Image (cartoon, rainbow, N blue to C red; front, top):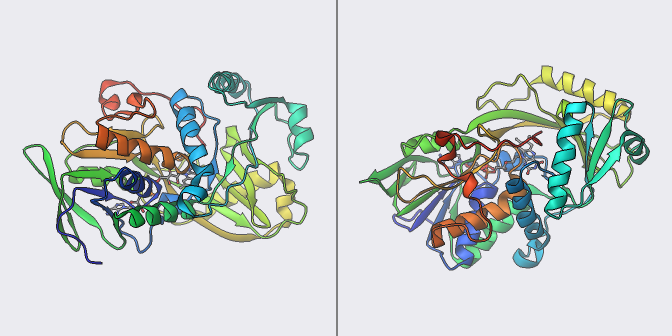
Length: 385
Ligand SMILES: Cc1cc2nc3c(=O)[nH]c(=O)nc-3n(C[C@H](O)[C@H](O)[C@H](O)COP(=O)(O)OP(=O)(O)OC[C@H]3O[C@@H](n4cnc5c(N)ncnc54)[C@H](O)[C@@H]3O)c2cc1C
């Protein structure tokens, strides 16, 4: 299929946000949509590099509500789109090792309860009893929610792209957007490395590259790329099937079962913003040292693979979902700050409502507007890993 010269809506970025937006627009009958992805395949940006975690445990109402909207959409995904997405409900266990985090998480759990999320509060002994494989003498408390878990990011992207295409939307890989054109403050088209497409609306779903893409429209967007890396291990025979997604909160260190082994990641607090996606071997050594300390049986496993990807970080660790007021027809769904895979389903639905109805109707996400940065209305998320 060749690139069209005109369409109604161009979506830039074929990760979970772009794919979900394309599908939800098409589902509403808006099929004159073109999804453009610069890489060879869809989902090779942050989405394909992510850990696949899905959780309800957040510290702000809007993030919990995005999970309450999105995770049931993942439960219905296979039925709706005919694509299995490997959902596992292993539960998320946050380990808390200092009084400050204990106090903050007590508040977060109370907020979660008020919104119907039944997170369990565990004392240190309960944590040690539940997951005896952990070296957890220093753990003061834990927060566990059994409906948190995992899903496969690439299957979600491909399910949405396939669904959008079946409904009539067009989706292309290997096309880089190099310009966004406007006239009298309105979107008129995009320029790509393969020609111009005239359009009335552009959706910036470019993940860690969203700031760079936004510059093409002359609209500043404070989204910073930040490297995060992951390692998977060879088989670990003694790993129980019910081993949860464990997050050592103070160390930003996590593990979950992956195949016969484990996947583990740790955020480097000294990482500097940038587009470098090479694996930092020095940090990997530090990460593995901390990981073995927390989960000693890791010493018996080898490395199966490792990679680095980019978080798309905003000043308050919340995304922008909405219209950018400077340019009519320009929309942003980006900046999920390292926990966006799980919110992709809801975000795409809400973006389609904003475009087609003028505002999000399923959920009040007015707090996630573009203007909040300039107007100092930041909403801080505590449960960022
Ligand atoms: C190591 C790591 C672990 C993570 N773990 C989790 C997790 O457990 N759970 C969770 O929910 N989230 C997690 N995340 C975060 C999650 O991956 C992101 O929030 C989410 O995938 C963002 O999706 P996106 O569609 O906005 O971005 P992306 O998936 O990056 O998609 C943007 C796309 O835009 C394309 N693009 C950019 N510029 C252009 C252009 N000019 N023209 C055309 N195409 C362009 C890119 O190639 C890219 O494919 C993790 C992220 C990382 C890096």
